Length: 95
Image (cartoon, rainbow, N blue to C red; front, side, top):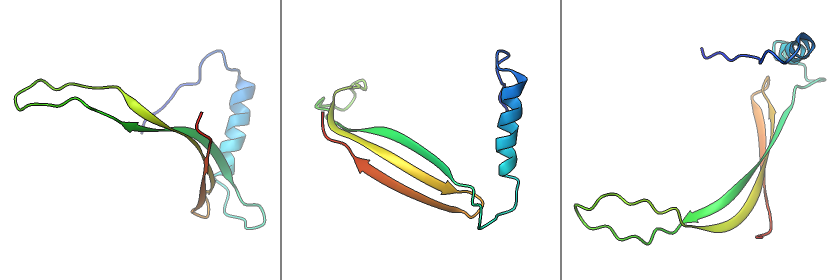
């Protein structure tokens, strides 16, 4: 198991509140009070456009050029105690 450290500048009050939140996941499933987690993540849509032709025996070349196809936002709602999740992808306009 991999561990992590809470930085020394974060006080005990914060840790106590965090432990209260984590204790919710230990409770048995209750249909009247579901535990729902939500997250949002923007993702850039890119396409590689590698125009470098390679000949047999040549050193590998890396091309960082790409074509941008806009951005999407990924929204996820997760009900971990029930094993259920919902995902929605919302398109954004090309800038």
